[in-house]
Length: 102
Image (cartoon, rainbow, N blue to C red):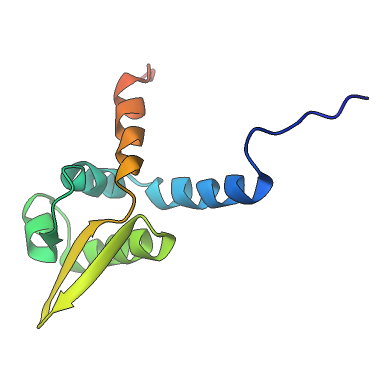
């Protein structure tokens, strides 16, 4: 039996799976789409572009931050978010180009 050599380490595959898990929700993909320009956004700015309850948005932002997709900074009472890994937006290109059957 021939051993197949992996191109990506098992450890890295686990981290990638965590990232995909963190994106596995339509709202999180919308957040990623909003933030793909690399700018810093307040929660209010993100909220103004989504039809979502503020508490639910906070949940999604926290999950994305915990996984490492986003980073945040607090300034007074405001929290600002930015992509921590800008290359993650390549996933959006992949999704756009995928042929998904309805």
